[in-house]
Image (cartoon, rainbow, N blue to C red; front, side, top):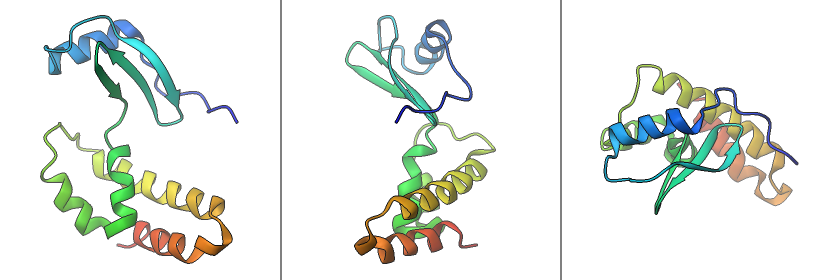
Length: 121
């Protein structure tokens, strides 16, 4: 099944500027190597860069809830914009619903717990 289009596409020139500003040691021209509904992936030499860092935290919400995830976020060294928590809450809720829908019937209880954590608070 093909991925839906990325809602905020980036071109390689913009990616090059963003990467050079944050990771000057990553040298080379960004090569787009993939995309999904939530990100685009680029490679620069041996480095790989993927879209919104919110995606890195979604599964933590499922595993330990928002208090646990907030503690992990305090140790995250990359910038988190003011809308980070709002996007995280939306992504955790949307993906936990998706995961529950796609779950094997024998694993539904597990996925229901993830769903409850995503909708807590």
